[in-house]
Length: 285
Image (cartoon, rainbow, N blue to C red; front, side):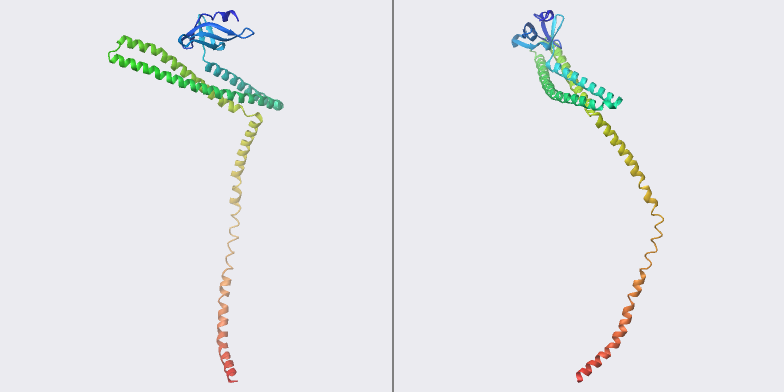
């Protein structure tokens, strides 16, 4: 334990927004002498063991840092560093294509790091949502105190000075809740923006080149398709008059069809008396 760590003993502990939490009464150390937790007397809540990393000495006061803030800051720091290294990797590959094979190996390493950070991120997001719900519940409780004090004042149960004192005390608490709520929302927004940047850089350099080549081929093929229809529009123009005379031979079969009836009718008319004579001779015999 260092001298700075001994300076914590007996000092008041406050949160980041100035609210008093309690007083440091002692520490618990590991076998190598490093501090693990700090014991804080929180009054009616009793002795609370707070991790040492959540406390910072500032003059005569020890500042308590919420765990969600430490974890989110660590996540943003690690993810931002990984993202910067990925961008630097892409720049190296673009400047020297011979290092592409080595770059792909390193790229997979950072990609696996981002996947592990995604699991931590999901846990932190859940904690942030839980803390926002707690703050909303606290805000409703504070508003109920103000509303009840106003009713007591209107019903002449308390004086106006007492009502103003309640408003003054609760105003500081509302500011603390509002400040922490805004800070959590800011952290959530930074995590979302950082995820968008990671998605753009997570693709390997080779895949990005393939996508750019595919987009180039699509544009060239579209240009060819727009030019190909122009050829058939000019080719059929001279062929139109050649196909026009073909319907002329069609009237010939129409003239040959009526001719057989004209030859058949006279033959049938002449054959009828022959048939009748032949029948008469047969009957006579």
